[in-house]
Length: 330
Image (tube, rainbow, N blue to C red; front, side):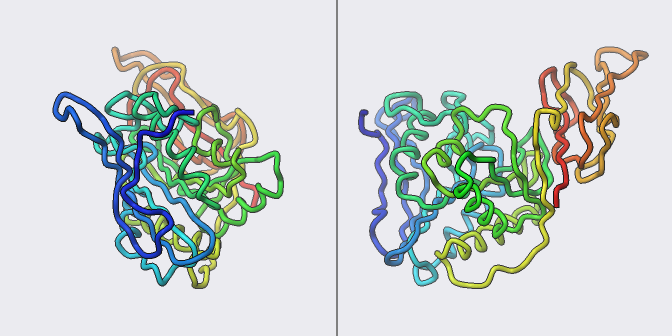
């Protein structure tokens, strides 16, 4: 395997607080010998576990970016036993453009693992995370939200794993994060995901969906900040007491949880996030936006539960996820 073209300007083994970059050479019209400079903070204090904290894996998701940028300012070495690696803007080109995928190569970082050291910019970032950051980490927290096209109940999530001991460790870390909802997540397509790469490497991995609509709120950022702190306390990296918080447990057991639109048009949501839904209920209607006088197409829930996610904003395309219904399990 070729070496990664990315070089860190920080020393991951040095004690103290370091702010620097993951430097990726990137030759382009406005900078022939230029580079992408992906911000990174490393806080280390002696021996102990290492946490990798990432935000903006998709560039239009901001809770992680805000919470981790604040943490990078405030976390002190004496508060840490072990190491915290903070990458607030993991897909930096996408983050700077405010888009889900990279503005350079249109790459979806969360579908690009394990990456390639001689691939596209997005593949090079994935390769560096896969071969250099993940091996350092004992626990991984990747903070997501819905971006510009989805809105979610605020939940932390893990996946069902073959290794039940590993799944139990992930479950405990998710519960420590303490989001208002906790989800066993069903992915429609897990190939190439950061989640899959971390789980296959045996890491404790927790992700989130903390809102959406292409922005953050005071509430969603507060959930992320508090969750990160309690995650680090749970992992034995920071001292303190985890504040007890009620988290409603949700499950997505199969594909019936997803309601997909088969039409383009104007979306009318018929239930709101967190509302109870019965199997067969109308969750949304899609109107032909090219004419008046035609009946809307109604979309029905495939199972009972609560509305955990919805399309955002008001126009929808054929193939888009219209709604996600999750079961309440505790």
